Image 1: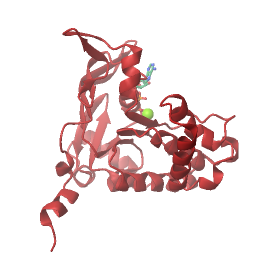
Image 2: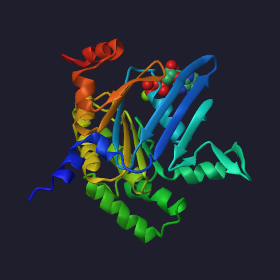
Image 3: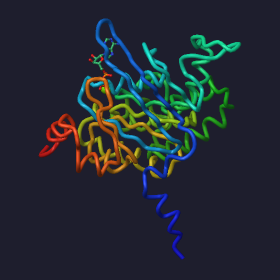
Image 4: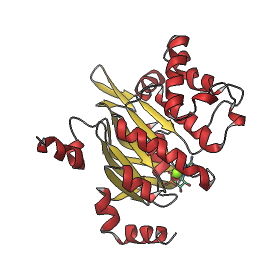
Length: 274
Ligand code: ADP
Ligand code: MG
């Protein structure tokens, strides 16, 4: 017998929004000098949800990710991770600025893969992956190594465990960067244009790894990307940013097939016929 209720839950993106959001932005603003680059971002990311962020260069996508990763402090609004304020904390009934210790703790539920891989060049691949769990999470070295090998296997690089970053292609380095983020078992993974620095022939192997991960994993993912087919394929929901605002959002079919705003229509038109 087909379980229709569960089948529906599998396909309807809004059904994925169960429980409380793991990430909640409310009215988030960011100013650099005289320029306001985020003008009030509201964003909810639910457990297990895969959300793609598309939008022109300079529209604020990376700044959103960097604020969540605690690399930038917002100039306004609030950010919550698992119901806990990221940039503020309540102490004796008063809201105060978060200290480094608090940020460090909340940050541990978030993993990020950047456009450039930032591997340590003087460390073997396996040490690049085990460095943070051993030193930050105090995971026993043996356990970290066995988990690292498992993850390197998952990204197709087990045989490169003892190689050095300089011996790897860009696509391979990026797959190591993914394994390195995964070993921390984050609740949320951020991918910021992870294929845009790669030679075109290496893009596919990295997207394939992320796609497999998205399909099998219960982590929430925020995927900032210029790869429209990939966004459409992987995301439950797509956000379109322009000028520091989320201008449009919805299921991929809707956003790509029936863009409502003129800005999204012209943005998508630029990708057609490529
Ligand atoms: P995107 O990732 O969508 O290309 P970003 O979030 O990187 O956009 O940038 C949004 C705007 O903020 C851009 O105009 C960029 O020049 C500016 N910006 C980003 N980081 C800084 C910074 N550290 N100092 C000054 N301006 C910045
Ligand atoms: Mg960017």
